[in-house]
Length: 499
Ligand code: BES
Ligand code: MN
Ligand code: ZN
Image 1 (tube, protein in one colour):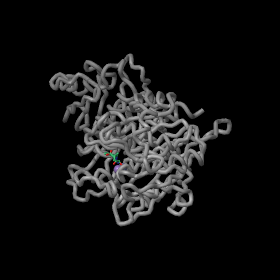
Image 2: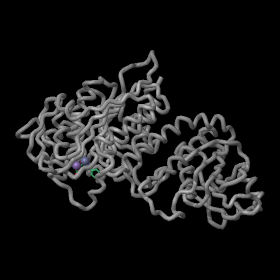
Image 3: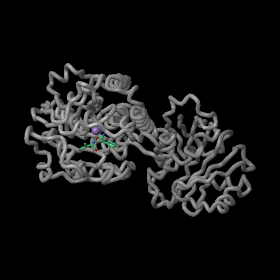
């Protein structure tokens, strides 16, 4: 979807959308449009009981006095409550209404309500950002979709007071949306298309953005002693990979130690020998969403030329139950030297991350490490699909993420870590086991396990099992792969680690 910016003038063709404030408050452009159409907008709002609540939508079809076949009104709510997210969601709501409407072009008038904290320039840019984010579709395998259901909308123009300034503000957001789309693409692909080697191959595309990409194969990982990660992959015909992506954008005077992001990339999780039930197993194609988010984040940071040094490390394996698969009770030795009794082969993400985190801490001496993983079903029991769970050894990092989550709409909720849980992963036979007691604090146990592999690096584990995929459309996120984490972490880098 192409987003552009232009003066607040009536477009010659295509659909028109107008933002409407609380209590049907129209701006100058809206009032002019209302007059031209003989009061059609006011009357339609009245008739439909449309009041201008955030994301509220009203289609006014075939208005007289203008060329447009329809005018779409979108609410932005009370001006005092209006944030960047409100504007994004308004842009998203309009695109959702028009995406497969038959319209090919759309102009959205960004009318900043009096008293809003959000500036007019930002409002227009954020409307455009939301419009683009919501336009995402993963439909490459649908060859027989009826024409009237296919997206028709190709071009969105945001009409605003200062198009040049808004276009400039939009530049970084456009790159961020590209990063989100890359994540959504990777996560949406089925496991016969995206497996460790093909995922690593896609990472090579980031070289075009100036990212250094290094791929470690099985032999290299063996040499490094990554027995935990390799154990997970050994039951699959697809060999594992570890991909290291580096973006070096820090200016000369800045701290050169990188920020590190680490992702769980289980390209399919059958559970292994501790096999999962058949019902719903297809969802485990998105068990690589952590790795997908790290990859999209690297693309976003490089795309907007972030002024920071960042490393992204993703552990890619397929968890399958063949004759060579690891068995419950197997003991593996991780790169850290710590041994792990694998009591459940379905608790595999922590085994992959154990080696990926240790490798990252040791190789890059990072300022912090943040890992993303669809680690536990238990986090869905705790937080549903509204918040991701975060676990951290650093109050500063946890607080920053929580605050950034509220600004970006990618919400996180801090859960506890405590040595009191350690006894649940003590093993009789090895240094630890990979599960705790059934039904008890499953997400915390997973985090407690990971913590043993982060040395004393400030670290956050984000459990995205409940937020990586959405079964319903919401705001700027169409149903399917959400791209969760990319906006959150891009913003966190921008606010605290650049400059
Ligand atoms: N990938 C799953 C977690 C998951 C579940 C993600 C549902 C998304 C939706 C993970 O590898 C897993 O199987 N975890 C087990 C851990 C258990 C065996 C300790 C789980 O959550 O049941
Ligand atoms: Mn599993
Ligand atoms: Zn898994």
